[in-house]
Length: 120
Image (cartoon, rainbow, N blue to C red):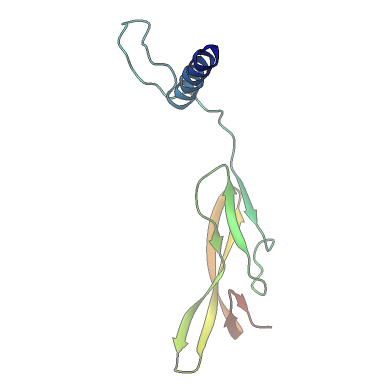
């Protein structure tokens, strides 16, 4: 019987802690009305990461921002034409960082583009 009471109290405490972390405070102390306020999360500056080191047309890379839920951007070939037997691409879209922003540049590869990088 003591184990059931202990488990019940433990579950109630865990649910309460989870609710507070998720939703913040539940009562407005000035009015007594029940409100839901989100807890303030620490603000941290974003940081931009580029796996191929910046404008590197000969190496496929991925670029992303730390501390944000934005998807990463992966260098890719563009201006492609397809035939029955092959696909030929002329340019690469290169993603890179400028400060804390992701920007892109389209570059015409002299020998074409394959798998997100210029052919060497």
